[in-house]
Image (cartoon, rainbow, N blue to C red; front, side, top):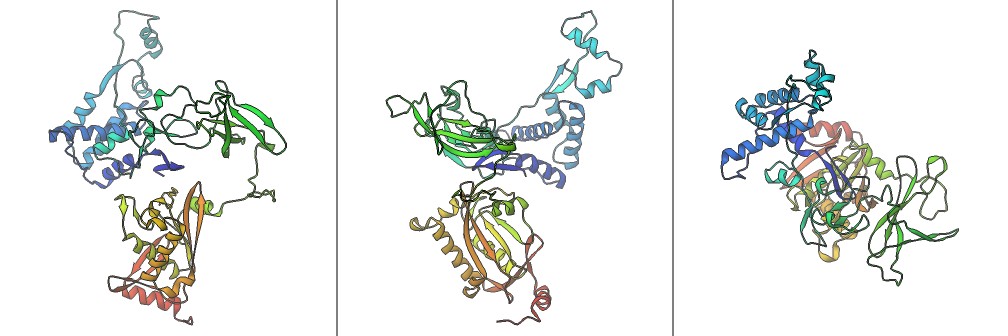
Length: 465
């Protein structure tokens, strides 16, 4: 997986690295945008970014010279850049150091590195010049810069900060470190009064893994057999006379040590904390909503997503919303119909709409926005999907398709359960009929000869209703 979303927050991404390595391997030229006044300056800056990205992706701290040789070889085999250009970039970012790498020490067995280190710190100084190693210091580039020079392929969501009004990109650069992975405004986050200040918070991540008990210890004001009550003692937005805020549970999860984490959130200011009760044996079963049955409830749809695509499972990001072009695209509806028909012509299967190829749960919100105001919901989505099936496949085949919806991590997913058809299904498009079938983990269009052979093999002896 090259990028990871949590609760709709892009917490990690290396799409640019993957794309650079793919282009080098397949010898695809890099596009050089004219983002500087001088085209030659744009070319140099693009090459500098490519080298820096590759350098940081290797074991550059321990083996800087091997990294330079490897990167130089890859770029020369690619053929777009000359050796003198590559050397110029490396020389520009070189510096001398007495903090020796493992590679340098291996290549200089004649040196007494213990003595050199002592001389470096002035513990044992003589008049002999201290041996220096040539190293390279390439800067790290943020996602905004990668977009500026044209090396980001992600469809990045733009949000508006409620505090300063600046636009903030949903990228790993703006995600806090740790377990909570909050999406924050970089202009406001450094101006917070304390860790409980929600200034600049755009999207909250998972419940806090560790609460900050030392600075603002929550007050447990009531414990009983049926519930407990906790106050946030220094709430800045409390409407109570005592200026305290009631904290409610906003999430439950289990940490790496098997302890239950109850995420707490103040109803007034949004300040968050965490409570960790003891568990039996370090584990806790998940109960059903009513609590009537003490059993573990597994999520079938999560298991399907985690297992990935197959001959019986396919993921589609959306019904109508084009994430690459960031707009509604009616042509995607044909792709959905083709996937359904492919399952019907094979052994049936499951189509999940709202999940991308990398198992990221995107949800259906973008699709909802493409419908009329009174249809931006599940009913409107199902109605549109049924219309797509009628248009491309045929109304009489609706009985082989069951459409339901699942809520996973707060996002809605359309679950399409497709049964095998007792007769061949043809897709109607642009005045012609196409025969598609699910083969392996791909839906393929068969040519006329392949279609006849496939139908003869699968339906010749079956009674067609």
